[in-house]
Length: 231
Image 1: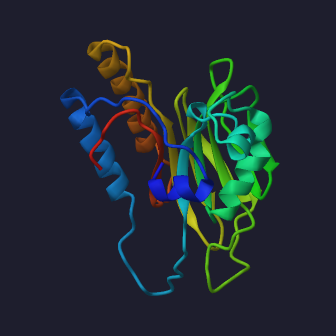
Image 2: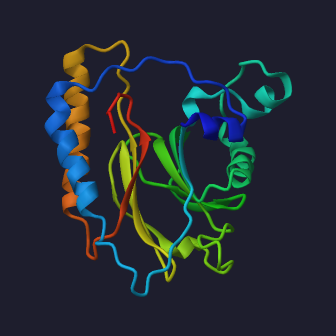
């Protein structure tokens, strides 16, 4: 989460440790970066319509109760799903079109509405979901065209795993894919375990990207990668 976004949302500084990106994962990272770069269409101005897109990513498990923080400034309590409307309002005030959330612990999957957003919770093999994708359906995606908005029906998840999901957002105004990732934590673990867990995750992601249905669209990577990736 960038300092500017934290300030816009009124959030406290996060605490935690990150380990450097393991050299063993460098080939996997390079391959993933190439896949993302290759997804970008060649530049063209013929018939193009430019959009203004604001995106954000946030690990809500590392936050305290939003209401208690905003009133007292103290770190106490825990983030609860009942705070979703307040979170949605903060995102809308920051004029974010797409938000990826991690460590959400939602116990149901599917698509619903919260505030001005369409809330997508992918299915998870575990007892609860690790991540979500929120898309603002009220903000225009084209500053010159207030009608250029995204509806809930324009969003579809076409690949998912325990710690990732890939969704397409397509209509007359925009055609993109969004990859949301919540990588395994790195602290208090042997380095061999960290490398193995991350290798498994990024292999799953790579396999899913190689099966991307046509046409190829620009791909946005959002999430908590729990490492320093150097991008």
